[in-house]
Image (cartoon, rainbow, N blue to C red):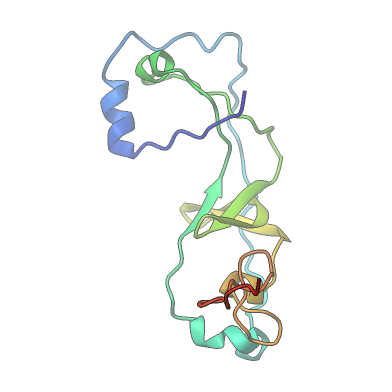
Length: 158
């Protein structure tokens, strides 16, 4: 059976948590506090390194860091409450997926950045040109590096 991610807003989770039975026993799952390495700043990137994507620098993008996922039945979601533990499909210490606009682009590890969580990039999976949707020569490309489909394809001879 394929796993499907369930995405709920904080308000939806809070609303669901107030319903149903008390939180189930985590079933022998060991719960431990976690400590993270303090964030150290890396060297700043120079503008010249961006090449053909420099014109895109001010375009906002959504960055998501995925800690893990779990398949839950509706009854299990409705039973969630304070103290409930949802076991995820990822092991402690395993790299986190970093998605930009929904596309997996890197992997990393959790760090503490001041008073907030942060993520240290450990592996880059796409080039800046691929991320911006251009090839290395600055021409538009489709995700994955292939050329985009023609806007008005020529009719096939036949």
